[in-house]
Length: 291
Ligand code: GLU
Image (cartoon, rainbow, N blue to C red; front, side, top):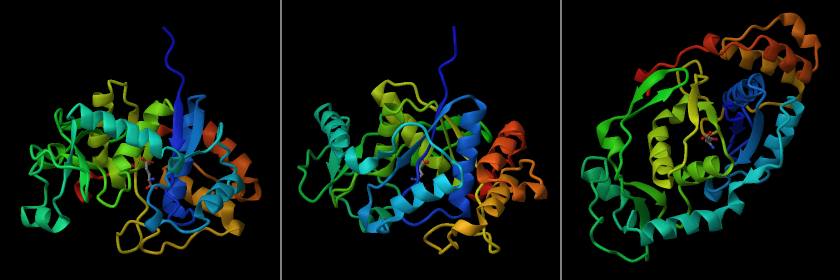
């Protein structure tokens, strides 16, 4: 029996240009996919307009090209998948696998921080409500390709989580799982900041009765204060000129070999060298305790 062909992806949210943290995820997912002779897809996760920056999708795609990170097929935009998300939600509502919830964040916080299923049996209608998925088969742990067994806190695993927000926006966990299923992703390689959301995504795969991808979470790039570099805390974004340097920096974060002489090469040539030397086992292990 031949193994399923590898399909990987990079799925940036267009909340700003790529920065070193997102570049590490792009390079890591790209090299892992290519090392398996796999496809590498790009998906723009543009389902949260209030958090998006005008023009960022275009900038990100241009940056990827400039880094020599050439993707396969056409880019999938989540903003074009809303009908599919709604159709799945409607089906779950019909099957009573999902329900409407009117609780506010404040109420949930006052009740201890986790949502305790208050609205599950209230048969509410959609007005001014969020939609939650019943955690009928909670996922308490999963195997990460790098970190090994990851335990998900019980309260988090058992929480009926939001799949559509009260403001009408679709939730990340819903969109990401439906798209990973739709695109036939066999392995998700991404930053460790969202490692615990994996349980929710696995719960959705169970409900869909589809084979879930493998998950591999990469170490996060932290600033000098130990904070995650992100668009929100104004990580310096990457300018076109220092691309080779940044690629080498990303490779160092991934624990991969790099040589100063590579700076003379094109980005494509650097990636080819990195691919020839790619060692999954050299990626620094993430510390789950800092979550
Ligand atoms: N869109 C998410 C982000 O930019 C990544 C989601 C994922 O890779 O699953 O942080």
